[in-house]
Image (tube, rainbow, N blue to C red; front, side, top):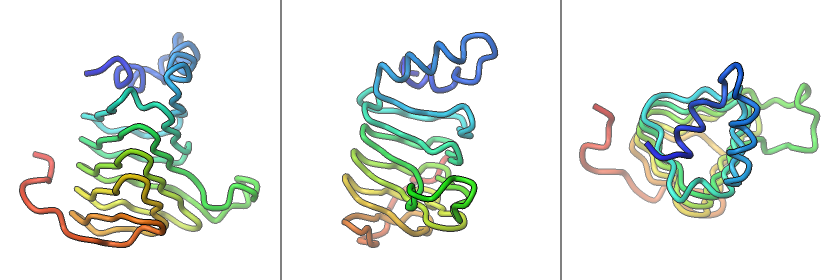
Length: 150
Protein backbone atom coordinates (compact mmCIF):
# COMPACT_ATOMS: atom_id res chain seq x y z
CA UNK A 1 0.00 0.00 0.00
CA UNK A 2 1.41 3.39 -0.99
CA UNK A 3 1.71 6.29 1.42
CA UNK A 4 -1.07 8.19 -0.36
CA UNK A 5 -3.42 5.21 -0.20
CA UNK A 6 -2.66 4.77 3.51
CA UNK A 7 -3.48 8.46 4.06
CA UNK A 8 -6.76 8.12 2.17
CA UNK A 9 -7.82 5.29 4.46
CA UNK A 10 -6.83 7.28 7.57
CA UNK A 11 -8.59 10.54 6.67
CA UNK A 12 -11.48 9.73 9.05
CA UNK A 13 -9.21 9.13 12.06
CA UNK A 14 -10.70 10.84 15.10
CA UNK A 15 -7.53 12.53 16.26
CA UNK A 16 -5.37 12.75 13.14
CA UNK A 17 -8.04 13.25 10.48
CA UNK A 18 -7.38 16.96 9.91
CA UNK A 19 -3.63 16.41 9.74
CA UNK A 20 -4.13 13.58 7.25
CA UNK A 21 -6.36 15.82 5.10
CA UNK A 22 -3.61 18.45 5.05
CA UNK A 23 -1.01 15.82 4.10
CA UNK A 24 -3.22 14.71 1.21
CA UNK A 25 -3.54 18.35 0.14
CA UNK A 26 0.25 18.53 -0.09
CA UNK A 27 0.02 15.69 -2.63
CA UNK A 28 -2.68 17.66 -4.48
CA UNK A 29 -5.47 15.29 -3.47
CA UNK A 30 -8.86 16.22 -2.09
CA UNK A 31 -10.67 13.24 -0.58
CA UNK A 32 -13.37 14.41 1.86
CA UNK A 33 -14.07 12.31 4.94
CA UNK A 34 -17.64 11.77 3.64
CA UNK A 35 -16.38 9.70 0.67
CA UNK A 36 -17.00 5.99 1.06
CA UNK A 37 -14.01 3.93 -0.08
CA UNK A 38 -13.88 0.15 -0.29
CA UNK A 39 -10.83 -2.05 0.26
CA UNK A 40 -8.02 -2.37 -2.25
CA UNK A 41 -7.90 1.20 -3.56
CA UNK A 42 -4.88 1.82 -5.80
CA UNK A 43 -3.68 5.38 -6.43
CA UNK A 44 -0.97 5.88 -9.05
CA UNK A 45 1.41 8.83 -9.36
CA UNK A 46 0.53 9.94 -5.84
CA UNK A 47 -2.87 11.04 -7.10
CA UNK A 48 -1.66 14.54 -7.98
CA UNK A 49 -4.66 16.68 -8.91
CA UNK A 50 -7.28 14.13 -7.84
CA UNK A 51 -10.52 15.58 -6.45
CA UNK A 52 -13.47 13.52 -5.18
CA UNK A 53 -16.89 14.94 -4.37
CA UNK A 54 -18.11 14.20 -0.82
CA UNK A 55 -20.99 12.16 -2.29
CA UNK A 56 -18.66 9.62 -3.90
CA UNK A 57 -18.59 5.88 -3.27
CA UNK A 58 -15.63 3.84 -4.51
CA UNK A 59 -16.02 0.05 -4.50
CA UNK A 60 -13.35 -2.56 -3.89
CA UNK A 61 -10.16 -2.63 -5.98
CA UNK A 62 -10.78 0.68 -7.74
CA UNK A 63 -7.77 2.24 -9.49
CA UNK A 64 -7.31 6.01 -9.70
CA UNK A 65 -4.60 7.73 -11.72
CA UNK A 66 -3.51 11.33 -11.29
CA UNK A 67 -5.82 14.20 -12.19
CA UNK A 68 -9.10 12.30 -11.74
CA UNK A 69 -12.10 14.45 -10.85
CA UNK A 70 -15.42 13.11 -9.60
CA UNK A 71 -18.03 15.79 -9.03
CA UNK A 72 -21.17 17.67 -9.97
CA UNK A 73 -22.02 18.88 -13.46
CA UNK A 74 -23.79 21.92 -11.96
CA UNK A 75 -21.27 23.55 -9.58
CA UNK A 76 -23.00 26.94 -9.91
CA UNK A 77 -26.08 25.55 -8.11
CA UNK A 78 -25.94 25.42 -4.30
CA UNK A 79 -25.28 21.83 -3.13
CA UNK A 80 -28.64 21.57 -1.37
CA UNK A 81 -30.47 22.54 -4.60
CA UNK A 82 -28.50 20.22 -6.89
CA UNK A 83 -30.26 17.22 -8.41
CA UNK A 84 -27.00 15.24 -8.15
CA UNK A 85 -27.24 12.59 -5.44
CA UNK A 86 -24.13 10.40 -5.66
CA UNK A 87 -21.42 9.01 -7.92
CA UNK A 88 -20.80 5.28 -7.46
CA UNK A 89 -17.64 3.71 -8.90
CA UNK A 90 -18.15 -0.04 -8.68
CA UNK A 91 -15.59 -2.75 -7.94
CA UNK A 92 -12.56 -3.05 -10.22
CA UNK A 93 -13.17 0.17 -12.18
CA UNK A 94 -10.17 2.10 -13.53
CA UNK A 95 -10.22 5.89 -13.92
CA UNK A 96 -7.24 6.87 -16.08
CA UNK A 97 -5.20 10.09 -15.87
CA UNK A 98 -7.29 13.21 -16.16
CA UNK A 99 -10.63 11.40 -16.31
CA UNK A 100 -13.63 13.50 -15.27
CA UNK A 101 -16.82 11.88 -13.98
CA UNK A 102 -19.56 14.48 -13.57
CA UNK A 103 -23.12 13.83 -12.48
CA UNK A 104 -25.97 16.21 -13.28
CA UNK A 105 -28.87 14.47 -11.58
CA UNK A 106 -29.61 11.33 -9.64
CA UNK A 107 -26.94 8.68 -9.23
CA UNK A 108 -24.21 8.15 -11.83
CA UNK A 109 -22.75 4.64 -11.73
CA UNK A 110 -19.44 3.60 -13.25
CA UNK A 111 -19.99 -0.14 -13.73
CA UNK A 112 -17.82 -2.87 -12.26
CA UNK A 113 -14.59 -3.32 -14.21
CA UNK A 114 -15.22 -0.28 -16.42
CA UNK A 115 -12.28 1.74 -17.74
CA UNK A 116 -12.68 5.49 -18.21
CA UNK A 117 -9.91 6.60 -20.54
CA UNK A 118 -7.39 9.39 -20.08
CA UNK A 119 -8.97 12.87 -20.20
CA UNK A 120 -12.43 11.43 -20.89
CA UNK A 121 -15.45 13.36 -19.60
CA UNK A 122 -18.04 10.84 -18.45
CA UNK A 123 -21.52 12.29 -17.91
CA UNK A 124 -23.69 9.16 -17.76
CA UNK A 125 -23.77 5.74 -16.17
CA UNK A 126 -21.91 2.80 -17.70
CA UNK A 127 -22.41 -0.93 -17.73
CA UNK A 128 -19.96 -3.48 -16.34
CA UNK A 129 -16.68 -4.10 -18.17
CA UNK A 130 -17.06 -1.26 -20.66
CA UNK A 131 -14.35 1.05 -21.99
CA UNK A 132 -15.26 4.73 -22.31
CA UNK A 133 -13.19 7.49 -23.93
CA UNK A 134 -13.54 10.94 -25.45
CA UNK A 135 -15.19 14.26 -24.70
CA UNK A 136 -17.99 13.67 -24.05
CA UNK A 137 -17.17 10.05 -23.26
CA UNK A 138 -18.75 7.33 -25.34
CA UNK A 139 -18.40 3.59 -25.19
CA UNK A 140 -15.53 2.45 -27.39
CA UNK A 141 -15.27 -1.18 -26.38
CA UNK A 142 -15.68 -3.96 -23.88
CA UNK A 143 -13.04 -5.10 -21.45
CA UNK A 144 -11.96 -8.71 -21.94
CA UNK A 145 -10.41 -11.13 -19.50
CA UNK A 146 -10.75 -11.66 -15.81
CA UNK A 147 -11.22 -8.03 -14.75
CA UNK A 148 -13.78 -8.76 -12.07
CA UNK A 149 -12.43 -8.66 -8.50
CA UNK A 150 -11.93 -12.03 -6.87
